[in-house]
Amino acid sequence: MTPGCGAMAHPILAAREVSKLYGPKPERFLRDGRLAATPAELSAAGIIAAVADVSIEIPRGETFVIMGLSGSGKSTLVRILAGLTPPTAGAVLFEGRDLKTLSEAELIAIRRRQMGMVFQHFALLPHLTVLGNVAFPLDVQGRPKAERDARAREMIALVGLEGREDRFPRELSGGQQQRVGIARSLAVGPDLWFLDEPFSALDPLIRREMQDEVLRLQGLLKKTIVFITHDFDEAARIADRIAIMKDGVVEQIGSAEELVLAPATPYVRAFTRDAPRAKILTAKAVMTAPPAGADFAGEVAATARIAAFAHDVERSEKPFAVIEDGRVLGAIDRIAMIDVLVGRERPGGAA
Ligand SMILES: Nc1ncnc2c1ncn2[C@@H]1O[C@H](COP(=O)(O)OP(=O)(O)OP(=O)(O)O)[C@@H](O)[C@H]1O
Image 1 (cartoon, protein in one colour):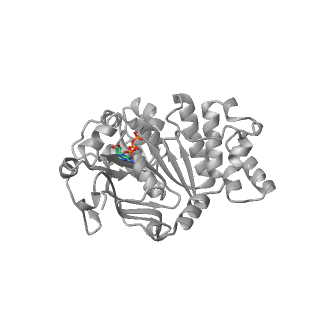
Image 2 (cartoon, rainbow, N blue to C red):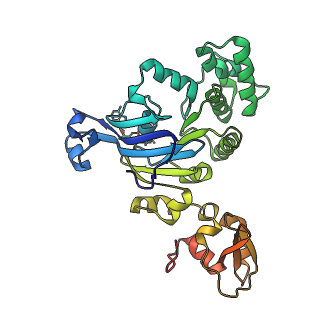
Image 3 (cartoon, rainbow, N blue to C red):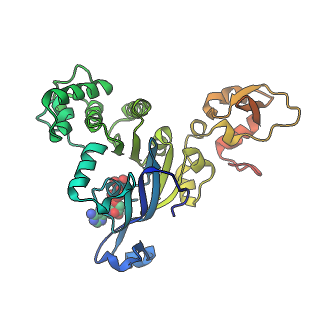
């Protein structure tokens, strides 16, 4: 089982020991339906393991981010999860149903009605207006015109493009076009929303704005999101949990905080080394035991991020109490906080 992947009651989506091998006769390298070869054996045989024995479980309502460098297998894994690419080995379960057991028609119906997708180079239809583009998936579903236009207008308003319904894609900025793509993917009301590097082509400010947009929409709509990025900052901003991939393998799954504080492999450590710790780590994760009879300068919530209280703690000689449910859970002082922020190991500490 993939590290960090505990059993979950009813995941909306699960991958079980999924592999995707490209090259001549890849079945030679499976045993009992599972990848059974070392990377060296595969590469000697000219086989690329785009995805190698990956198991993940995504509960309903989670924002799950898959990250890794170019070529690490993110897109292949997402295509497998969405039922677009059959895995060489392993199974994908959507709402408990194994995608391999479904007919092509059933798969298409699931993709059209229950899954939404946004890609970096998504295709807006150039000859259709914003309204036409957003209504398009509903048209494919055969919904009546009045109903699909009303729904499309609602989605256009949701992504902040009200008033631009009659524009054509070429009349919009890159960020606005991406909003149209988002509105279109949400039009059918998907349960599961795949976003594959949706903002990579946008400049940093717009990109941040679009991340906020995803957070806002997620707060409103409570979808299950599978989001791909190669940017840890982006992942840390939007993820409940992050899976870090390298050479087709999931190296670790955890919250941004877990990955930063307890990297399972040297690769994850290197990947998270430059992460914005103050924005990721919470008081609870970095506190120490409260000193006996401590004279506290103030209180911080256990769930508060360091960035929210760093200024006060940094200026104080005395420690701050870390509070949860009205109780003092621990303490944080300026030295401990700075150690954590610069990634210095503390004896017995988490960082
Ligand atoms: N159809 C294919 N045939 C052969 N090899 C493939 C195919 N699709 C992907 N690969 C290989 O599988 C590996 C993983 O590719 P994939 O596109 O999933 O990576 P990625 O992490 O999404 O990369 P990027 O961030 O650049 O999109 C790469 O080595 C790629 O060359």
